[in-house]
Image 1 (spheres, helix red, strand yellow):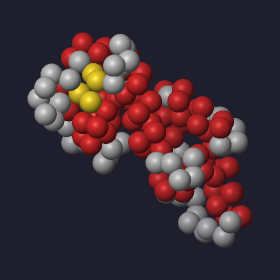
Image 2 (cartoon, helix red, strand yellow):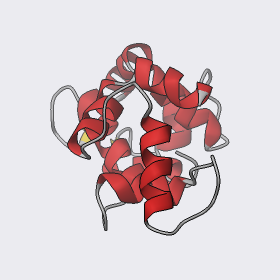
Image 3 (cartoon, one colour):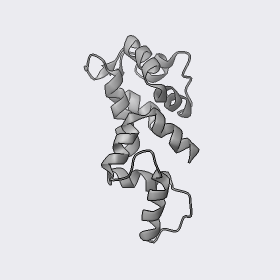
Length: 138
């Protein structure tokens, strides 16, 4: 519960997804999900798995990929579909969740971030490179 509360406070996109799913933002999200799961016959107790959580928001759409795409698009200031060092540096400052996603993917969020994500070393990070590097742990 504490982790979700912190995430809700920090991420407007997550709040928007919760509202779109018909749940009350910020307050009692886990309780609402738990009640719906119990009503559907799922008796996993007070715990909500990532799969249960993500299915509620956009069934059939991977929420992790959707979240990564929103972050990528927000960081891609010139909207050319590729990130350059300057955009990534600005994005790391403006988007705190990006650093934690990078770290959860086993990468270093403080040093050589660009080089870790630029798989083909062409000086730009494509959506494909961004996704491939980060989706496994986002």
